[in-house]
Image 1 (cartoon, one colour):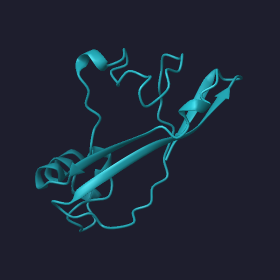
Image 2 (cartoon, rainbow, N blue to C red):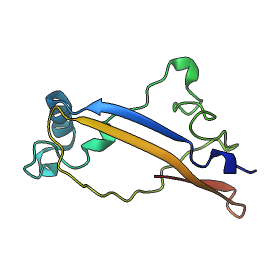
Image 3 (cartoon, rainbow, N blue to C red):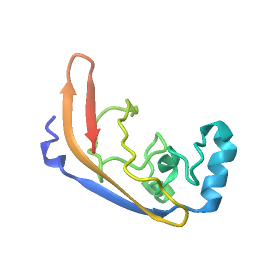
Image 4 (tube, helix red, strand yellow):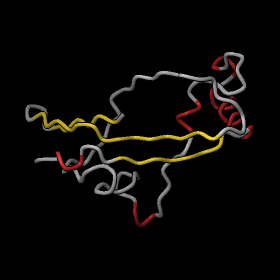
Length: 119
């Protein structure tokens, strides 16, 4: 399995931070997650969700593979971790841009897994 042709594939999404979004985030996680800023750290996970029509969903409920991510021949996907840097404090009514680029894929034959790094 060679996925080298997929390296550099990217997707960009835009969203606007709204008061409703912040309010729902607060009600979901509670006041203890807020640091005094109008927009709390972590809200970025709620921005620009990937939305596709039902016919474009895979059996796991995520968008089918083969567009942004390669069609990896394993049934399960798992998020392994992330490193985050908050460069600016977000504000209400600001546009947020999200870009994910496929940087590298590694086949780990011992565990029958493929690890994909997104930047």
